[in-house]
Image 1 (cartoon, rainbow, N blue to C red):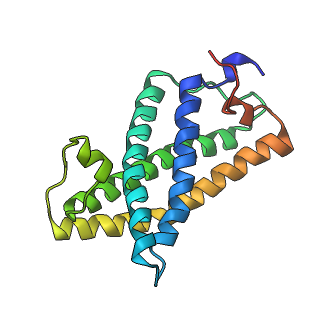
Image 2 (cartoon, helix red, strand yellow):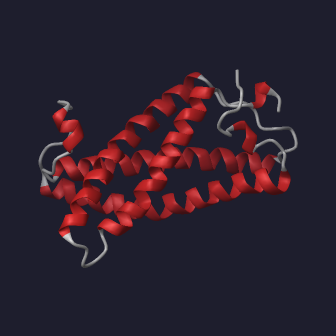
Amino acid sequence: MNPTLTYKPLARFFHWVTAILVLLTIPVAIAMLRPGIERSLQDPLFLFHKNIGVVILILVALRLAYRLLNPPPPLPASVPHMQRIVAEVTHWLLYGLLLGMAISGYIRVTAGGFPLEVFDSLGFPRLAPRSDSLAETAKQIHATLRIPLIGLIILHIGAALYHALVKRDGVFQRMAPGRGGV
């Protein structure tokens, strides 16, 4: 693999940590909202989901800033033009949906008057005013964005597996953990 076509280590770090955290929050969200779930299980799931959501928000914001200062390496020449366009659009939609989910979740929690235990204890300021209507709007946005986000994640994983296992064209290796990079 040509090192000039590989993502830099910090970009790969942001990608994989964010991916792991997002993939953890999805089943947690499903479980915590399941009807009839016992409060003794639901409370720690909410605690995890809320606080990891803020971590995801911070990671995505850092990743976007890093990407603007360090553009990604070019795709291999073998990737057709239409796939390049789809990849670019998919990446920006993923960033937008991840930010939308994290921001709406944060607003839901803070405007709803709920604690962000880890961040409250560290003195992080609340950036949304207490407001039931704002909290409800944020809750609806959060619920609405989950479907396209999950769909794009599935598309992204499918494309990565296609490039890694079928095409074997170096696209997956660009972001693979443990690879070199410049």
